[in-house]
Amino acid sequence: MTRLKTSDICHIPPGLKEYNQQLLAGTGRTLLGIACHACGADEIKLKNRINSFTIHVVPITTGQGIISNFSETVTAILRFLGFNAMVSDTPDITGVAKSFESRADAIMMADDQGFVGINLNNRLVVDNSEATGRVFASALDLMAKGIKNCKVLVLGCGPVGEAAAHRLLSFGAGLGLYDIDLAAAHSLKEKLSIGQGIEPDIETNIKTDIKKGIDIVVETSIVRAVSAYDFILEATPSVDSIPHELITAHLHVAAPGVPLGISKRGCQMLKDRLIHDKLEMGVAAMAISLSFPGEETRGCFE
Figure 1: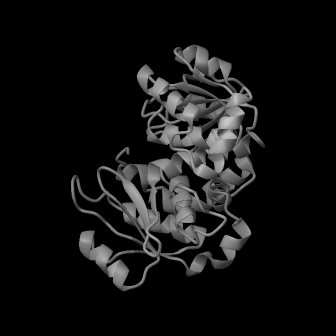
Figure 2: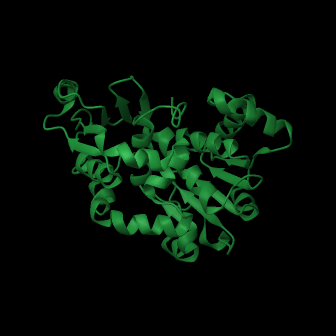
């Protein structure tokens, strides 16, 4: 998990309405809608009951300590979506205990090692890296108006890239995998090929698609790879993973990577064919997965 800085997130609360409109323009769905798509959730059903689900965001002071306004920013995103959310008035273990005592439905908390959500009613744990990979893959599916049978390049084969790759396969996409650590790309290809880490309800479909010829290819040249794909899931911590010289008029990018691996000029070239944020979509997917985990969200991030 990349440790965010205050400067990374200070703009988020006042910019949520504008960002929501940008997502709607680029994908046809709002922040809530994209998160529901990531979880296979019924957006209308969730809208009707989302405000009765209480989430406490618990500040954690261990390690390098609290990122200024992190908990408040997460809470702002949750409230924007319609959740009953608040920052715990005490941090750490005491905050967790008070959330139990006050009968909160879920908590969210982050330290130097991870950012998780926990449903206090059913013990479901949601990891932000996995949620982020899945929701950005789902955004790319919406940008493509259906990614099935399209080729998608996954840049970065860490936890976020792996989760994205699983979701893209579930949509029926063919995959190219690239990582500066070639062994990581080969390892992920092997996991995907045998269905490791894939939810049981979609594992059979993915294995069937692979047998039918949906490819998983390990790319060894970033220049050749970027030039060969119209859809890219950029999940690296690199600042220039997609050089602007390689950006075409057909390229669509969903980029959960922090920092963004595209230059300012590259962003201007992509315009609404780029989706990137540092917190919003991942938090939204976590919240939807945590809330009302009935038939519509079963299997999501378990």
